[in-house]
Image 1: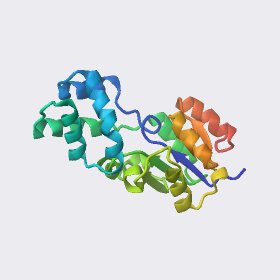
Image 2 (image 1 turned 90 degrees about the vertical axis):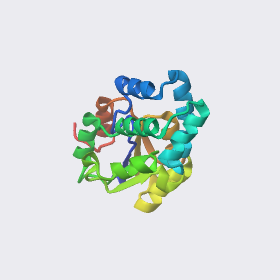
Image 3 (image 1 turned 30 degrees about the horizontal axis):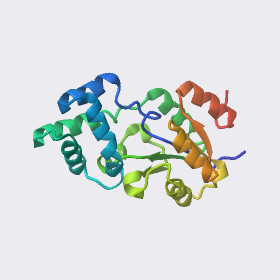
Length: 202
């Protein structure tokens, strides 16, 4: 079957974000109990991924925790947080490079604006025909509107489009609009899946 498009998620697929030592660095910079920090971080991340600035996000987390962070502490938290997201996962990036020229590639990421703008210059994403970010789409996965925007802009047929994502809820959302999907667990499993789809030679 000819393919119109392969769509990659970013975090935990093309990149390995927040390894243990970086998580600890963020927790130490926060200076509050780790469980409370991550609860607040996750609570306000959806707003950051769609509309909130970095400054507003850290204000919201600070207020939630009643931590009393000063501007210098928020800057350090921001720099560690964004820095955690910029290291590519080379085994998966190499698979994406092998697909270049065979099928158009797109990125669909729930990324805030400051991270999105940095990723637009990432060498790991060279050769991607389209980069879609939740901050620009004003919607996050698994909302059908996110996948429909990708299909509309690229002109790809859903049944000839493949989404690669590590979160089951996101692959389920893509399947609901008719896309083919692969739930990412490792580069090795992805390589076998791409071979099964006829996108890579064994």
